[in-house]
Image (cartoon, rainbow, N blue to C red; front, side, top):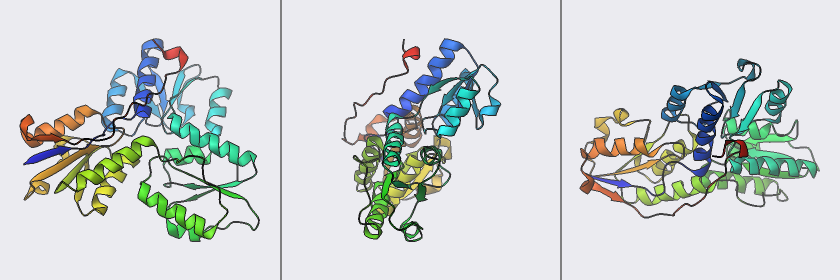
Length: 307
């Protein structure tokens, strides 16, 4: 059995920054450090941070007065920032800079009098945070059918933005439907789907052409990990999403000669290695590394947390 590793895979710069912010805050101010929502959507990462002193909460009311809170990589609505300020909480913002870019686009478009259509998944914290950048004038769609169901007043100027972790192919279908129904709709100045999402999806497309089965390392709550599984399946390759090696079902492997492995942007490489070792019995000769885009993106930490 051959194991083929996709490249790039795993952590992106936004995830690395978010994790580092929580770890540095614990080092600097001591435990506990409160984190609004899971800082990234990965069970292993969040469990590790809990062991170091992070407490994950969903409501700022759970943070005692005078304590430190970190906003997750997915971003938060303006109302959350205002609440933290009113309560006098010390805040470190781990919002991915690429999500912040979308927030800034929303603010600019709203100042210009446009209503905005957000393409994204219902209930995802990034979508909730982006929708919460404006008190009104926001609409959300997820599918082409949603576009047809939009109720927009006559004469309204429209623009759109997208969730950064969407499937590129799916988002393009929705964007095409928007442009067909609203020919004058304004696009973002640059693509909102982040570089890491695009690179990992492109790598899975390559991987699918060489694999009988693809295993995506990532948590069920991770949007970008789920999209990687879907990208593989759309190319006719069976694909499964697992948090760890122990979740691999031996039945998946029957009759399989080549297994492709990738990882979502919030999944650490140690989990990939455990999956590879479980499939190869620790034999490196059975592992093939595909070539791929080299990523050199880095995002700086808040000044107070830099060493």
